[in-house]
Image (cartoon, rainbow, N blue to C red; front, side):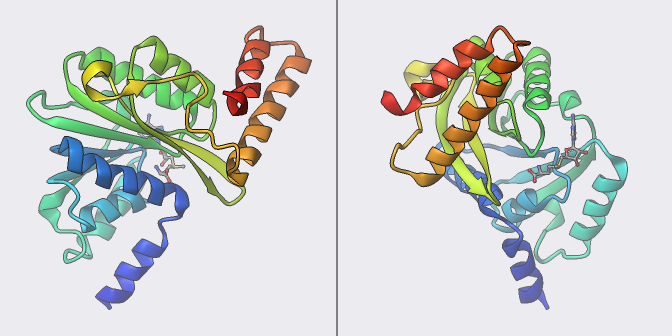
Amino acid sequence: MWLRLAVSVFNSLGPRLQAIFDVIAFAQQVRCYDRVWDCCCDHGYLGMSIVNAALCEKLIFVDQVPHIAQQLERQLLEQPLLYPAERYEVLTSDASDLDFNSEQRHLVILAGVSGKTVVDIVRTIRKTHPLGNIDFILCPTNALFDVREYLVAKEFVLLSESIVAEKSRHYEVLYVSPGDVESTGSQLTHTGAMWDEKNIEHQRYLARIIAHYQRVVEGGNDDRAEGILQRYQSCFSR
Ligand SMILES: C[S@@+](CC[C@H](N)C(=O)[O-])C[C@H]1O[C@@H](n2cnc3c(N)ncnc32)[C@H](O)[C@@H]1O
């Protein structure tokens, strides 16, 4: 029974959530977060895997929709051996309204929501907790250039970045910190430094982005589009 449940949870981590899980596992070895926040958690698969693998002292599931959070909490409580209650909390909240204990180190995960939502949440968290030890793993569903543009403007430092393909879609996983580039990471760029010209999935992803911005340029409604297009067109020639 437990084996079946465990298998069903781990089967449900597709390549995208698995890539994020792997970054968290790495992050915990090097930066040791006290709290990991699975924000916009919905089904909670990522957080459940983290709790089950005991990757952190406490994982906080956050979703703004009450019935989603309630259903997830019921599911977790039904399986205490897989998800020991002392290792997690479930909050019904807008991820912008969270309260972070400034004496702890925090890792906030925002995945499966739009780039605009990601930027809105990160911006608000930074505003309400300017001195907090809060790093982020971001995996938006769209508008990666806008997300990166915001992070570059706010001088976030890059800890890791990657591209992951799932069901004919592509995602970027950005692990970033508001910390100091000298001591913690590298310079974040507007289009990324992770491109591998020989990787077929990178080729497909880049072709899709370029086609998107070509359409935007042709539409003539966005003054920035031509410049963004040129940046992406040079990704493989660096
Ligand atoms: C598509 S699911 C993403 C689930 C999971 N993170 C993933 O990547 O597979 C999006 C979830 O984000 C929640 N959500 C959207 N905006 C939110 C916000 N500002 N604060 C908290 N939850 C939010 C929605 O209620 C929904 O359950």
